[in-house]
Length: 534
Image (cartoon, rainbow, N blue to C red; front, side, top):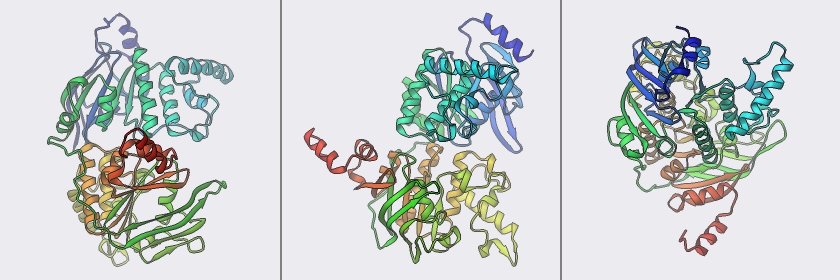
């Protein structure tokens, strides 16, 4: 039976039928069992969460539902009818849309062009454009997704780009919408806006499947949650009847510590010093303005701010990837200035480790084997070479040791980097950068897209590095992470540092207002006026 026949037949199916049923789904990639006898039932017009550790099989399961992969065995039912989904076109015909963690948009195209790409709707493009524009405006009004159809997608903030992805799915008739880690690149404000959109979609009868590792978000927006562990479905819970602690324990098979377990810092001499740093990009836009701070041995300094306020440019200068326009940087004995730019090799030689914000663009080569990604930037080290040639045996042995030490799953050095889950990719990058015991560690978004068990592990590694005497600069949009890990917190807004405070004096309100460029003195004065000791 074809998808088209199945979809037509669903009109006569009673509304009590689940919107989605997955029955006994199995999927294997070589030696890796990604899904094992997975069954799932999703009620129509609800928001259903799926949680699990990185590599638990969540994304694989949804990729089967959307037609990116075909199950080795098992059954898929949509609105009570069995369907065969061999590709994304079949899924779209069945009313399924998917918003991926990494957006699939064409940056130079307009919103309208991206939405209608591949679904032009008429043999003459002009006729199709007119109909598509009218439909896009209607969808925007109906679902609270208003956006300028003529805006260039590459110039939109990431929250609006995600809105375009949702509109693309709805434009193609999706009544079932899958969102894979949708908040990994969003600010807290953008996350709140997304959840309002999801609630509106639910009110309009759309069924939403939300894949995320963020348990607070699951508890805030879903009706039901299912838990996967190591390829199997281990539990289903009404969201109102569960808790963050129970879900975390179901995910990892043990109790999880939600706070960062660390003692007080014992700071030493400054190892990283920044003075009057400024960056003007090739378009003449000022990205950093008069930035000055220090990071001492044995402390973690957190840098908080809404994404896009200069944090990325700062990390690029410190890592030797971008030349400063003004000011100086001192990394141990290495000095960087406009007339003395540096590079990644020189920075590494100065004892600096760098965990980049975007592991795909800067941390790994997706087509490389894991053992190759595990030595990127360190490939000239004597331990990986035998004379003028690399030593494959030494490289593989070193990768296995990193995988064992950082619990990278599956522990296969020959597996392509792209085939690991996001959290396991992150652990491999972290293992590589910590392997040489750097004196200074630059860490950008260390737990973006990472599950709760891996977050706990990564935090322990960073605290251990601090306690061993490393100077750590932590950049994160996760305020809980900044407050939990940092000894001091710097706040950035508009490319400038706007304040500093000890971590034990920070809270969500204070940091949020500072990120909006409200002076700390004014925040404290308001707190005293309102009877708040802060």
